[in-house]
Length: 131
Image (cartoon, rainbow, N blue to C red; front, top):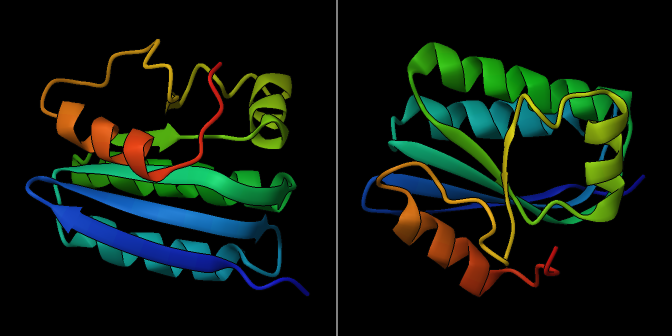
């Protein structure tokens, strides 16, 4: 069993949650509880940095959907950053890529107003591949 590593950094009106390891049935409760605590603190915008995700299955995807739902209920914008190919592929196959705001190092997509500093932080801190 691979442990899921979760950390968060807070600055101004945003929080960056860094996820490393596998997102699956075993780690879903950890991701859910951790992100719920961060979102409930009302940081403004939450960015989930997925650059360290090595595996994701349907349960991991379901966890991300639940996080998105909770963020929406709290009125908190949620962005996914640095999604590796394994995550992007699953999002595309399930047509959920249109449901999530995904940002990458290339900055091809502009973050919502007020999130440019957060996006810069994630881009500088994460080994994201240009897409």
